[in-house]
Image (tube, rainbow, N blue to C red; front, side, top):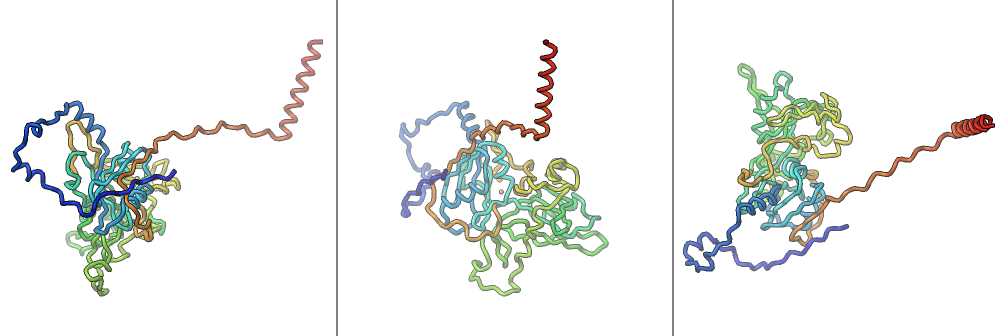
Amino acid sequence: MATRFPKEGGSSSAKPPVDLQLLMKKLVLKDEELDDVVLPREEVVTLRENARWMAVVKVHTSNPFGNQPFFQKMDAAWGFAKKWSIRPAKENLFILQVSCIGDWNRALLEGPWIFRQMGVMIAPYDGIADPESVMLNRIHVWVQIRGIPPLFRKEEIVKDMAARIGEVLGTDMFALGASGTSFVRVRVKIDVFKPLTRVVGLHPEGQEKLHFQVLFEKLPRFCDVFGLLGHGELECRDGVHGDNDKQYGDWLVAPVEDRHPLTSGVKNKGQSWDSTRGGRGGGRGHGRTSESRKRSSGEAVNQEVGVKPPVLATEVPQLTDGNGAGEKGEQQEGVGALALTTDKGGKGALPPSPVKPPLPKKQRKTDQNSSTAGSASERRQEQ
């Protein structure tokens, strides 16, 4: 059944919002205006409980887009298991709420989420602060560091180098791509307002400096001139650039065949080795099964620390991020929507009762003969 989206309303000639805090300094309030509504502490606790698993969402773009295509695209990308809702707070600013920790982890920890080649940023929200006050400047990505010699392929060394790319969330020290290339794989949060990191360096004292290439497994659109996300080189300044001006390019994106590598496990920040990325049966070097390959590579870090749902009675969290990158020709611009609420909590159908297969012909004849012989023997005993 198709989801219907209400049409957006409002006038384009609306007045700018008034700064209430500034206005309050010069207003003389009446008795009715001083009569506040008092909420009992128990009700406040309940309201906070109902507001958990709430986040603020924004697309990293200055281009306008309709809400309806965005809702539909993200509905397919997120694929939440339970009821969820999203509604606009302001232009290109949305409030998302999910109903279970699994969907929360998927939205906050997986990705990068991409809409029309632009990154989608998500951050926890407590339901009280102004949504515009929530810092939205990071997305989660997998990066590959190529060419690290075995001598230096140590977790602490890798983390130090990966910290130059972004905030380290997890490491995969021995990934093996389908091309046969072995590399280190790191899950990081990158700042969308900073240029992409192309190489990381290591300088053993007394030896020459070493540089290792950084490849991103999936990226939104970025500028080949300045390496910034959110626009392409043709949209940068006047769009006319020489070849020497292009310091970035498609060579920053990892080959498709190496984006879901075999692995011995993912080491998440503050946790022990996670054998789930070594195959259903665990162990080292088994790789992921074909079933697990169907899910986003971000599932390996479902247990990352650092992003927790806002809970709740007295604690307020610290406010702090696909489809495939480079997708073109997505949904055309359409009429926006005021909100989207879906309910995917229905129960599935019961499995069919097992049906016994028919016996082979020879076996059925033998069973019939045995039954006939048994009946004849019983008659003789009765006589």
